[in-house]
Length: 156
Image 1 (cartoon, helix red, strand yellow):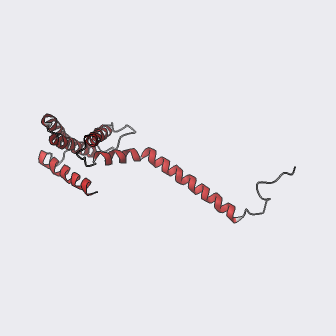
Image 2 (cartoon, helix red, strand yellow):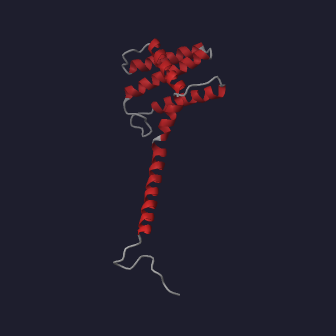
């Protein structure tokens, strides 16, 4: 039984096809690592954002999913600044987004005839905008912005 060398003898180069194959495998491994890293660290934020701003249909199950996505997004935005799961370190930006999300909930409540919940959510929206020192913390402004967001979601 003869012993075969895996590597070429010193001073000889490996064939070009082997070097290209090794470079391709290395590039694929790096791409896979970057893809996995992106999915673990970045995608949950973008998924929660897109789901929270989806336009609900008349289907009760789909409306419930959008509500849960909004609630989940609010919870993530309420993470303390030093929490590694915090979406942003800018408290005012988070308060504005939370306020607009509460505004979306208020509009959903109004469409479903839940006026008490609408008043509570709209009050929360206005309080969050005031806390962020927003220039126009009014119900009319919240309705206007939420209406524009919904129009954009329908256009997609």
